Image 1 (tube, protein in one colour):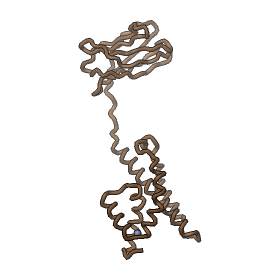
Image 2 (image 1 turned 135 degrees about the vertical axis):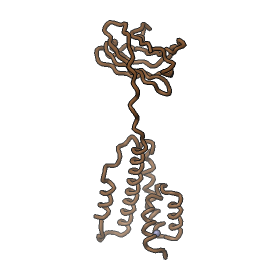
Image 3 (image 1 turned 180 degrees about the horizontal axis):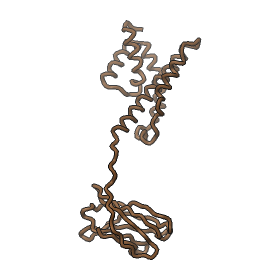
Image 4 (image 1 turned 60 degrees about the vertical axis):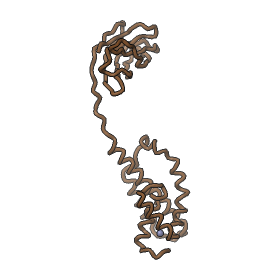
Amino acid sequence: MTDLPPDAHRALREQLGVYVLGHGTPAERAAVRAHLDGCATCRAELGELAPLVGRLADVDPDRLDDVPGPPPGLGEAVLARIAAEGPRPADLAARRARRARWRVAVAAVGIAAAAFGGGWLARPVPPPPPLEAVAVEVDRAGVTATADVVPHTWGVEVRLSGSGFAAGEVYRLTVRDDEGREVAAGEFLGVGDQPLHCSMNSSVLRQDAAGFEVADAAGAVVLRSVL
Ligand SMILES: [Zn+2]
């Protein structure tokens, strides 16, 4: 042990989980390093924590958004479990290792919760896209269709709803700009009488878009819209 005040030792031990995971501010990390230099107990504990980190390293932080957040109360449950461990006539080293694992778990839960919380707070609620209903002229028996366009910064999106497009047949949507250029905006498969909702995207900006067409596999125009 060291001649540090016991409170400082305890506070820095609590930081070990965060430290070993590579988190904390530079000042906090420097404080932990300084304490480790003079405290064999904490160095030993760090040695026990380090192997656990490899398993956490397998977690891809980019995928954190894809997994559900920690259930509410998990942190408290972990703490309660630690409290319940209490003193018992168990092997001291095993208990210390168990506490060390919990400390990493608590630190990881805290970090994950902060990441999720930060993500939720930072993630802007997207405003509903400004849909512009446009007239569609259908030139095919049995086909019905309506469309909206969405002006994106990268081009205009055409949201097409309809039915009667021959099942399994490929349809192509092209957007025409105001210079007469035809720009492919994607393809879709007809699903017969089933309702069809698809979203087609083109690189033509809304203000440059003069209209769009849907053609069948043979190139015959099925519907068109003038914007
Ligand atoms: Zn210490």
